[in-house]
Length: 393
Image 1 (tube, one colour):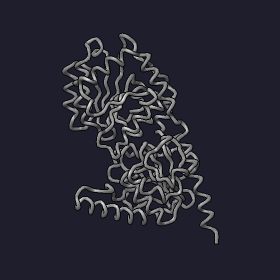
Image 2 (image 1 turned 90 degrees about the horizontal axis):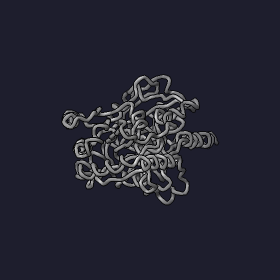
Image 3 (image 1 turned 135 degrees about the vertical axis):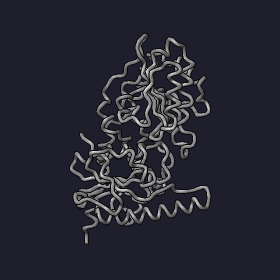
C-alpha cells in the first residue's frame, strides 16, 4: 500500500484538472499538525488503493508536514481557534471561521466531492460545515479519548462519527449509539514496521532512547531529559543513545548539554524517520498525542508519557491512561517531570528488561492494525446511500 502524500499546495481558489471529478473524490479536512494529518494520510493511502481520488484541505501550519512528491492536491483555507479569551480574539476567531467556511463552500462546489471527512483542527470545522451546507456525505474521525472542540460541534450533523478509543468522552448522547470505533489509523510507514519484535536492553549493549515532543516539539523535554540523564550512573549513561525532537531554538543548548556529559545524541525539530527510530527504541519518552499513542501501540514499545498540561479538555491525560491503565506505559504529570524523578525512573525501568518487554507486549494489545481499512469502509458506506437518495425524484 502506498501513500498519496500531501503535495501541490494551492490556494483555495485553485485546483488541478484531475481533482475535478464527481463520484470518486473524497476531501479530507485536517488541521496542520501531525495528530490530525497522520491519520488523514493513512486514510488517503487506503482510499487510493480502492480507486478513490483524494484532496486535502488544511491550514497554513500544514505546509511543514506536507509530503513532497505525491499527487494529492492540497488546499489552504483560513482557520483559527474556535474561541478566544478576549473580545478581540473571539471576534477574530469568528471572522476566521466565517472566511474559512466561505472558502471551503466555494472549493467544494468546484471539486464536487463524493464525501468529506474531517479530522479535527482549525481547517476541519469550516470544511465539514460547508459540506453539510452543501448536503454532501460527511464523516468525522476523533483521534483522542476526549472529543475535540471542532468535532463536538459537528458530531450531531455529520453522517458518521468514527472514534479511536473504546470510550470517548464528550460524545453527544444522540450520536454515541451510532458512532463506530475504527481505531486510530497510523501512517503507512508505521504499519509496515508493526511486526518488528521488541528487543529489551541487554547489559553492556547500546540502549536507544527516543524523545518525541509532538510536531511542534516540547521545551520541557529539552529542559529535563539531558539533566536527568546527567544524573544516572555513569555505567548506564555511557550506553545510552539518544534521539530527541527539539524546538529549533532549543537545539544548540540541548546539544551542548549532551556534549557536556559525553552522551551520543541526535537532535532535530522533526524526524522524518520517526517510525524507524521508534521501532529501534528500547524506551520512548513522549507527549501523549493521539498519533504518538497509536504508534506506540502499533509498534509495541514501552513509554514514559508526559501529557501536555494545557491540552484542551486534558485529552492527552485521557490518551495516556489508555496505555498506563493496562501496564503498557508509565504516565508522568508535567509537575512531576523533573530531572530527579526522571533519572530515578530511567534507572529503575532500564534495569528491568523483562518489565519493559511486558509493557511492549501489552501496548500491542491496544493496536488496531485494521483502523485505516475500517475508517475507509465507514466513509465508503456513506457514498452510495446518499448518492441514491439525491437521485430520487
